[in-house]
Image 1 (cartoon, rainbow, N blue to C red):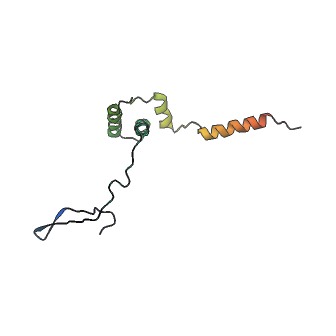
Image 2: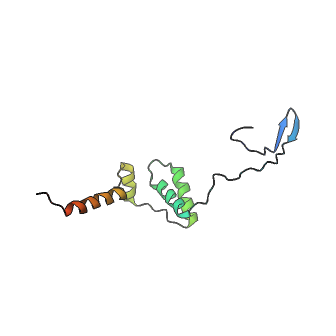
Image 3: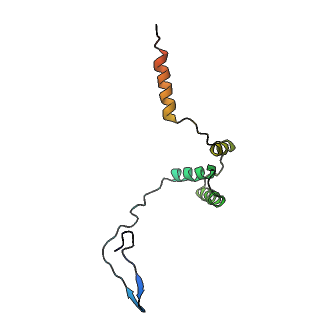
Length: 111
């Protein structure tokens, strides 16, 4: 039995005759499938629109999916420019650490 194969292979031909494979072992359907949060899906599609490495066909598919979901497919020009140039904003956690350090150091003075 193959490692990554189907358990019930249905009908197959062997040397001119047709044989039906009948396996009764239960198998797990959709083992890796989980419920998808529509907001996260829309965010991923919108990110693919702003990604400079996405193909034209990929952008068209993402736009069609967003419109089918009833979402806007607009990506601001500033976001497209930042993505094309590789400019990223400072991550939130890093900004919070910097702010807490400033608050701690603000009250202390060196004599």
